[in-house]
Length: 204
Image 1 (cartoon, rainbow, N blue to C red):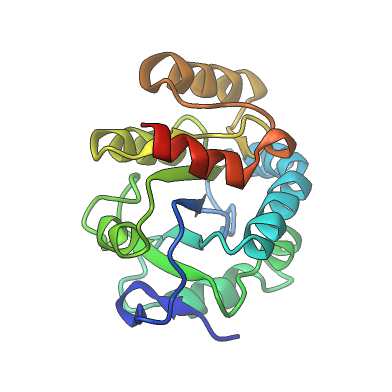
Image 2: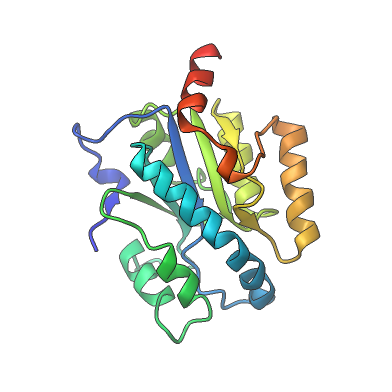
């Protein structure tokens, strides 16, 4: 598996007005209430999978924005290998959402994908104006990343069926709050049209 780190960005990388951010989908779910989150996350996996495949097919960059889980000597490849090990609770989920060679990754130390990471620089280099945020958990890292994206001037899209929290209601409430406070677009993933999102960027 070959991945593109943010620092490896080259002149040949395709620019696009939209980018898909996958927040903490590479996860071993080895923490309190991890089982509850895994159960609800598993329901979102087919929709995340379908959205990511459409993105790749449309030339939309896919960026894995992932916690380092406190493993400061690790890297993303090691994180993928560890979390996809069959002995890990989330192995089946991780195996379905494994990154491809053309994807990017950013490791984060805290909740937000922008906090002490090169994510903003990468998005600027990709000429991104709209971020589509999927992943875990809706009321924590997804929310933190969405707020930081909004404060940096990015248009925020959080498809309501591509994220999850420890309870169904927490997830619903978190997405609704993003809709109210950030004017985030929260339609179903299947309703997203990447070309229309780009056209909307031009009208901003």
